[in-house]
Image (cartoon, rainbow, N blue to C red; front, side):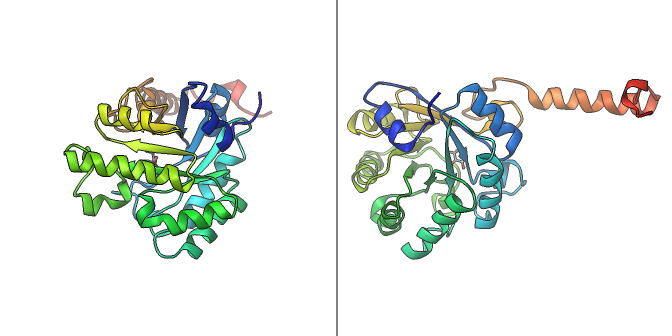
Length: 264
Ligand code: KIV
């Protein structure tokens, strides 16, 4: 099986291929995703909330993103590895943005980066990263790094003005050279219009079925996190709870370890 690349993801739109993307933050999970045929593994800055127990993504640092990206990239042989650029790693200057994207590639082993927001705000950063040969995935709609400005994790693009703005933002990101765009938490009909309008693929989360692909947070789809707009494909939380209770019971009763678990 040949390796998924930013170019193959982009070209897949013409062939009508749907993209399956999931987040991963650690090596063993990333290996399972890759073996299952996931096209894109995203080291999302959602790691701040999902595995670090923080209230939002804002405090996630470049060092943390590089660390998790390295854990994931060393496990993946087939999927495209995309790393999120954390808050303030690309918003200050284009030079800093390029250096930080470069760290995710050189130290982390990512093949592309994702950043939140439109080209009219972050175009200089996106251009600098692209010019260095690093593919960029856009992300519009609900952009969690702007949660304090948005006033919560709310559906975006409901008013006619907001719909038009999102369409312009999507066009702008395509125009500047992004290879794909995440559409987060927007009405399904708007996501369908944007998907129809663009030559690059859209990857939806809470954006309906018309997108060219879907992305979910791994822990949510496994039933190990929260499941707001997410279908739970397993009850990993329940399974882990049962396994831990069984272990506690066997340690207390002396049933574990048995002879076969001990060394001579
Ligand atoms: O950080 C993340 O996990 C993301 C996805 C929800 C798209 O950006």
